[in-house]
Length: 189
Length: 238
Image (cartoon, rainbow over all chains, first blue to last red; front, side, top):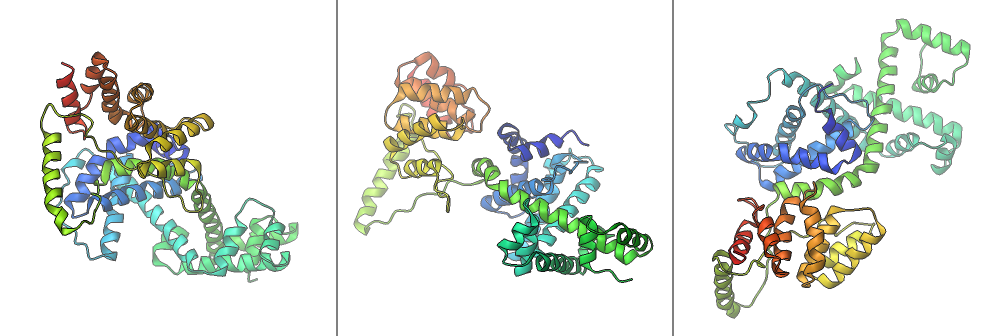
């Protein structure tokens, strides 16, 4: 586990002091980098904050272990988010932007960062697929609430037996949709 | 035997009887497709559960992230006024006077700007803090001060509340009450610590506590949005 795991814990515990430290240490370089690539100040702020929220979600089960410097993970995540943002808009990426601010990140940190970012993106795809599943989404989300399953069946207006069947069918459907996404081949193996 | 997702669900929930479980596990050892299905089912359960749990506590985290993102990334947006054509000349003249007041040494240190308090609009959850923020952002400083003071007496310490209460007190010329608030913030670790150096200096300046005013004005770093105002204070209390 990397020493920067403290920043993951800080996000999970809503530790204002350490979260301020994240901004103090990493925001100025990230802002300079993103602006040099043609990003606006507002978009740079959104990219940075969204990246922190992605990390928060990834680590929310308290199982996540950081294996590289936090900055390397954050940088790669912000880069990927910015590129995705440019694909959705007419924004042009400046390709010869500022990289000097990151020469202190060791090369071997990139593999760990890439692995973490891949995990973030795979989980995001699961949630995107789920989002498009209509009634199944409601059944799946409710089934994961920490309350008796009989109570959930009642809330959904289903008999318990039908709810169990519907739930497993919906999960199966989600699994199949996800399995058909090429990005998930590795995750599912 | 072909297993369905209902069987997988029952297996993962420990709902198969001993014989069914043994048969399932025997199949699982040799059937790679079933292994994949079980792994996928398990993984999706944990991923969706984790994200659902995170969504529930996300608003709390965003209350910390929003002001920091604003502070480090966002530009101050100028307020847009509409005015009659005949007013343009007067406005231009007033702007020039304002620029001179801010830029020239020896002018008032009270010409300072600050951000709106974040969190004024909370859809579906108009809590007390949001209401106080709304009052502040509407420049109803006396009412905002009362609302913030009420909040302080009923909720756990909050640097944002203290900071915006301090500015409300400054705006209503209650310098003696503002000073200890800003001094505590300036010596703390919150995101408001740096700005609080200037506001401590300003409160002390109005209370004619010149040593303290100078001491805190000197802590305002070059590059800070309050650096010029702090410079004016240093000049005035020399």
